[in-house]
Image (tube, rainbow, N blue to C red; front, side, top):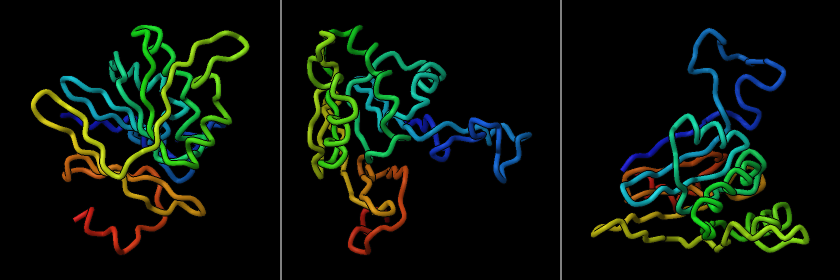
Length: 187
């Protein structure tokens, strides 16, 4: 299994659209950062976490040819606004892609991107199948299972979801506080 950080920049990326690097040194190539998305890649499954506005180039730069599932951490634009880039994977496979999110994120996605989930007046077919995220997901990988725990963390005034994969790796794109009761997940 590979875990690929596709992007790790702030909500505006580095540099920002106006060329501002903030306190980052533009001579350091690691300071060119796209917005947050990550990928769990195995022989059988390609699971995307978040659809950043930079998703198209992130997928091209990492030679990603398929997406089997999408997990959302939260509803902010820097996590969701690349959703349209999933269309090509639907067009290629002719089947909807399962998407998982908490209730507030589901509501935001349905309001902002309804055309992705239901047939519209323009007659576009739905490309995504929206599902409520569970605390524990089991994804079959040949004879093994990938176990993904979803743990709520605070991100300012909203909750964000941290994903823990096989109790070995935790991915939190945005967090301001982790409740003490959840510390054991990260030891």
